Length: 183
Image (cartoon, rainbow, N blue to C red; front, side, top):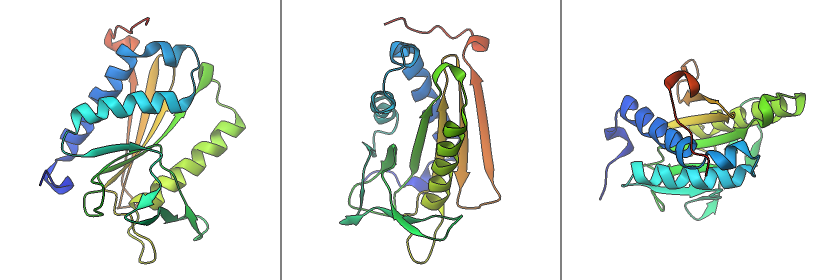
């Protein structure tokens, strides 16, 4: 039957995600350093997440909520819309084990433009919709992770069902004597 998402402690989940991101930077730094498409990065990260969350299904751009299209209610506008999260950690065919939803942004040359900030804001609004247990549409994700990928560091913002709660992690890989792969 597997492990219910409510049986995993938050610190264990956070460690598994951080280990997956570290593995991405170590084994696939080439795709980060050479401005490869964001979808290629999310695909590789999904592989490392699958190694950590073996009792779950890990999917990219998964657009279904059971047999219906995946929809959320956007918090800012209260409008309903179809969504395609970058990566999800869940159990296909169930909605009680939706553990993590990821939205990921690659920041090219650490150049944060107005367009980048606009799309980041939109992704964060989606994350809030994924974890919000709205009566009209509820996807029941336990955690929403916004991952911002830079060449030498990453930032994670974690969103919870409790809108007043948020966790931010910034990890500068150089500071941790992290050796990145040149492959």
